[in-house]
Image (tube, rainbow, N blue to C red; front, side, top):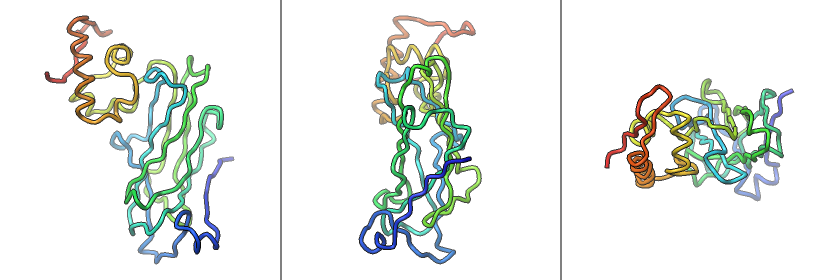
Length: 227
């Protein structure tokens, strides 16, 4: 049976609190919630604990909606898939499911992932999708599902996007990723600003110039960053 997490405000809360409230809207004013995938329309969020020295990671999942602007903080709902292989509590924790008015039309939830020994040998997943509640309609097919894949092995992280490939680090390979975490940057590279990305890409480029590396196909390892 699928697990549904839905947070509803009570009638009293509607009158006394700005948070967790539900509005009565005309059908044409309903808000439609969906996931704003960082990498085009790819619903998969990859994460490897090789990219951080921490035992807990926070995976950012951007959420947005179309429709009438918020007049207060509103709850939304998700449904966890039975195909999920991460263990709730010991390996993942869901955040409070609230869309904050101050964020405008785009907010972010952060799913906590805890490293466990078994991740050293395999990849485990958390799958969930947005579902409708009294505040938001989840009707945008193709933009409602998310799959967080977690491992402690070498694996391409979600922050290694096409932009990172084109302008900073070049084509992904397991070897390049492992070397970059050792000689460039360890952490969420995607969370850095452009100047920071450039700094660490150049740091890695200069290391490669002093320590030439060969990819598995026999070509020289390189990065496209200029400087």
